[in-house]
Image (cartoon, rainbow, N blue to C red; front, side, top):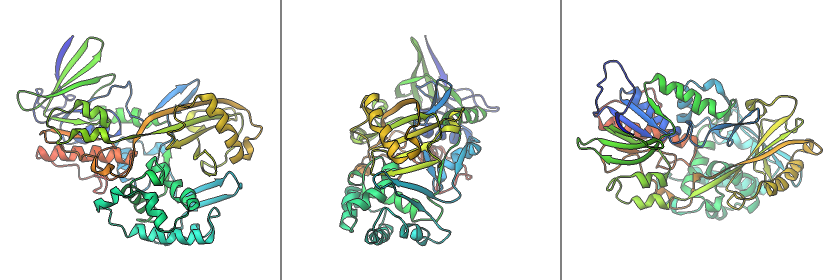
Length: 477
């Protein structure tokens, strides 16, 4: 069966036929949902298509037994203004927790020592000085060298394209950072935010992370996370917001082709099931899918060098889930040194676990050598490591152990990637790009995804001569 529909839901006073004020957004992750909301808020009739049976992209939940499990641990910082705008737009601020003040406990599995990265109520860079002076995982000389490197980072021009051609590890080494300093501080933060170690990261992206998160505002690095399952935010609340905005949302709908229509607009061909096809007509199309999928859907001539998209690599994230029969971690999260374990989060409350046990989720980034290991091998590797880090886990019963794998979780932030990331506009009028992998200036985070959706919608509305929502913070758009 084949049918033709125009984009968008029904809105009083709106035209019912195709025209410039109709839009199709391909992809229901954070980037696509953001773009669909922003376009609908400006008065366009919008259709959002998503191949999966849910919204949220790679930040989602699923059921396992009686628990609700997030596929991976996702956090945001107070400086993530776009993502916080998104939370407010979908009325989900009540479902997240944001620290009053940065505080990260860091345990060394070898020595057993516990240190902390925290901030004081002082101006930048003094807000971190006391924490750095007491940081037990570095020697006095290493701590002093960190201060000098931080000042050098703060002096970089983030707009300098040469930064993208340099790797962060070499830059740190040239400024006196020892391997231990890189492991115990720079990679502690960088691996989690960039999904790569310093030696494999673009200096441009690393400098952006550290200067924005740690050296821009005293409160910028305060950490936030979902206090409810991610699906309640990015699927449930987002779907409610889209429905209220009049967006027509098509799930389990795979986009197969995008081509120019005879009237100068666009025709988006989709499959809604076996033998069921639709052709959606719209004046504006936003492609908000991963880079390889975007490359496969781009019409000829849309980008001058479309092959660049295929040169943007990907990086995996492994998530290890352990359910104990008792409480073994007393903090919301813990960072680790001297261990394969990177970050451990308590997900007991959000998962719905009851009965006195505890559910821990380990978020493991930059794990190309582990992403395909069998579950039994991962169990043998990580359970003893948790016992080294958490003395209370020794002798505790393990009720369940499982893993979730995102083999292409993020784009790889390697040197030179900045020159490959396209902006929101294309050479095809009315066609725009969104996704955390596009040129937002940020690594592949929820913040980058939302920023890309805002940028694409801003460009699309500008092309139509329509104003962008001035309630969106300028820094976020």
